[in-house]
Image 1 (cartoon, rainbow, N blue to C red):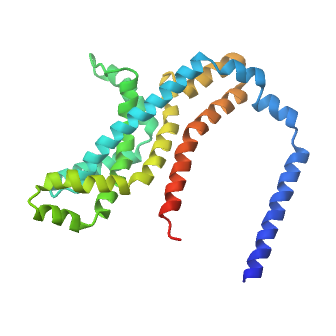
Image 2 (image 1 turned 120 degrees about the horizontal axis):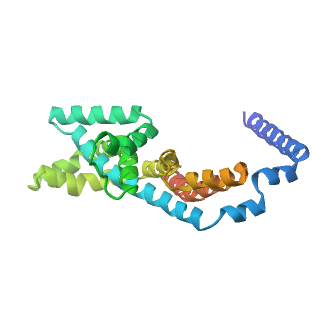
Image 3 (image 1 turned 90 degrees about the vertical axis):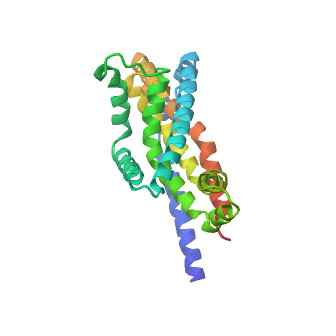
Length: 255
């Protein structure tokens, strides 16, 4: 079996080498550069407007993540509550927002002032984006936090209660810190997901990287170079989170 596995590895290496050679032989590098990596278009795209859109994208992501984390914690505690209506409300919320596309929620919040005359969402447009994306992410993060709370040994709570600590204080000081630590790895995936979901903000014509890329591409007719640069910027922002997430998983895996 060991020799068979070694032969299979060498076959896979050979197939991969053949594919790479074929790509190099049949791919027109000059044409590829003109379509995806035109230097003049890259220099024209990178400017104050794109950097401002980059800053807005980061602010949208961080604000929505904080909103979702706070609301997700409340929902997780409601699902674990002994009060049945709390559990029902939290379950209905999570199932609804996990089943509805984030873009629908975003569009609904952008049109909410039209449906309710006189309504003003604070910190526009950040308030609407933070609320819409935060509501969706809270449905996912609540399940992660709930799993972390359930993973904390019950003996921790029993020991705190035996020392005379109230139930709420035991949850706040003993259970939740350990639950957040246990649920820390999935938070990286959630943050990456929210970073990519922030591109949906372009549908409501709010300044962020995808929207700015659309404006530049429509004015220069060089769509692929602009969108390639925007995609690379998203990749550069998400890559540290992915690497950190992978390192944590490797640390927790058994040898």
